[in-house]
Length: 64
Image 1: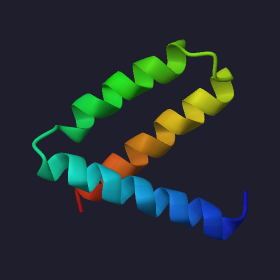
Image 2: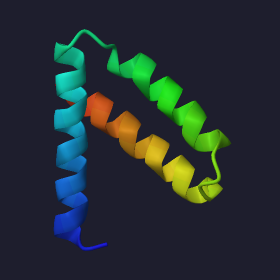
Image 3: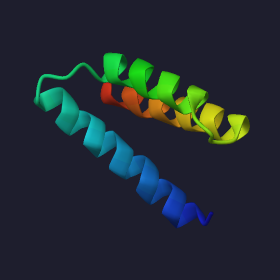
Image 4: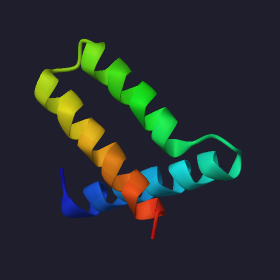
């Protein structure tokens, strides 16, 4: 994946999570639910784990 595309996806995820928070949904709760779904899905384990890490990093970015 190109560096620009990766940055664009990370930025999009941060903004989506910020909007989720504005709508009264706890991003941490949502992250736990999505992580469980990813890890139980047919997605390759390495990709699912990396996705969970990316989501957690985006939630952490909201804290700033």
